[in-house]
Length: 213
Image (cartoon, rainbow, N blue to C red; front, side, top):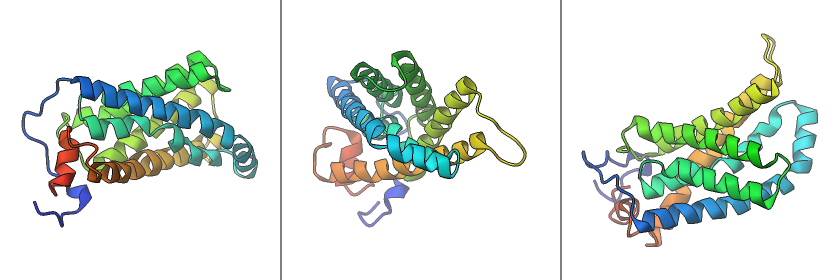
């Protein structure tokens, strides 16, 4: 495939990709988790006032912000490309964010991170860790958003009705935010990082530098 190929047409990985974690895989996934935790913590502070304003305007609309808490998993997965990378990075981010202190509390932050990470991971597992494309990463972000919504829905009993309600709007906005921020934006961030040569020790980086993505 030539360098003019579309980023979203990244070919199927080799039929038997290496799924064993290396030290560098752990290190990079950890760095993504730590950096994400700092961003998650800051986002909680910055979005507090806008969240209240949007929620008063249209209940559930603040779900548009939720992708800002979902990106660690898809980003780690598309870079490291090993089983568990999405789950690991999201849980690390959630645990560290909880330790820094936030409005949700430690246990709840860990649990929602676990759910989001599991659903982000599920997409890559469904493709047997062989498909690394824009649509797959976008789907991972969207499904992570579904996990975020689902946790809130079932633990806080958000309403749903035929005429629409907070739960419906929050589902739509959170899923969309996950797809765009944790999916599409992370795909292009990955490409930008890979093009600097920083990921040359990863198949994901070599694919970009070699014109295969």
